[in-house]
Length: 365
Image 1 (cartoon, rainbow, N blue to C red):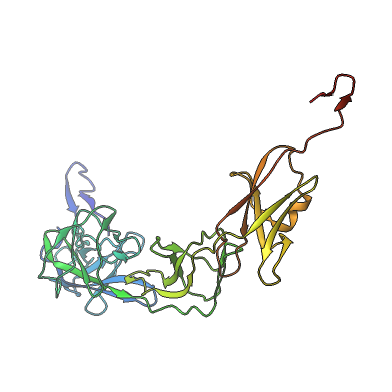
Image 2: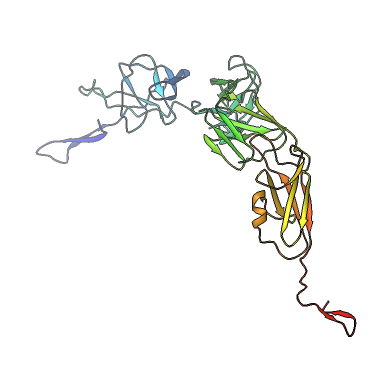
């Protein structure tokens, strides 16, 4: 099935010959895509295009989707295309004599145009994925042919999604080639039974198996991972959770897990400024003063690190005038209190002082 030139000559007169050129017929001219529909292929786990050809004669023609696949006869009334398909058609090889035999023809040019099946929706990012400038989209079409159409961008198109919108995509300049991408939905309300949080540990634990995000008060939504999420910056306000946006679905409505209260007032504390430095707090329950314990935190100076209250008596304090800030420690459900402060003065060294009775003075002051 290859073009060739065949020469026939007289045996005794070799310069008398005739050339027979066997070449390919021209490609079919009346074949085109009549109908194209997109659907999800369960086996391939992706969207494919089913095309119906007009002018295709299965007796005399065959088609090919790629050079690797080879030529095929049409089985059924449609051909399945994906993003890599290059659909061409030719006349079949016909065995026979000079009058009836024919080589297969030249193939047609590519019959399929752009593939719309990869276009998908990312509501979380507010974009249409896998678009290009040869496409248009609509959010208000009722059937893929009416409505307002906007030019798409390459390689993705920013778009504002609203619940209930149906998103359509079509080939620019070919309004008959369109696809319904999806209708915008919403994720269901989350279950928070297995969401745990600890303000004192700055952690949220997600054991729900759901893709969640959280916010506190009117803050931004922050993605949660499975298991422990550390370094959470808790603050006063409603601690809310919602399911993350998923494909064509918007995030769920938020659900409140707890309301984090404002910090308590500063604790009542005092400094025992002797040779041994002590910080005490007033305990209303026993109506007495007690050394601060791990129910409190302290830091030395405005930029110091917060430490557990029980460590203060073991702190190697500088022998200088210092300010120590004290607050009630955070608990599982409450923030640290507001801050109180106490002052300590430098311990004076009297060992070098001398009394000069004759002069009536104290020396080395």
